[in-house]
Length: 184
Image (cartoon, rainbow, N blue to C red):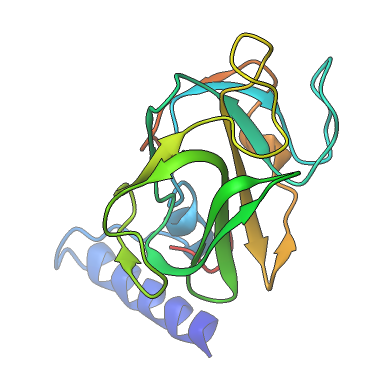
């Protein structure tokens, strides 16, 4: 239904532009969603989803090594669905629920912003916490301070390795070059 409507609108826009009625730009739905999710932290990618960077283990998310207590922000707008502590793994972590079955997970946080509560809404790029090394992470100086970041769909970690490469620097609030279908 949506595709039919989009095709109809695109056809009408092209007809109007051809007739000289106005200038119209048509953006395909996948292109509109591309880059809608933002990097939640500034730092260096040290591990990716199911894709080992040399010296690091495979796991379900991206690890972004950065400065201790630097701001971590919401990658996409949504509502906090879980705040927890996992002593042997994630340490302090948060899950934010988005639309269309998507959620994002942020782990090893040193702490949270003061308004962090289950049910609280955070807009994309709002600060949610601070990078740390809680849980099953080595202390600073041994490779510890980082953010573990996952994108989940219906509570299943998603593979999106083409978004960044090992040892690439990323900047908080910059677009992730990937199309998370349904997040636009």
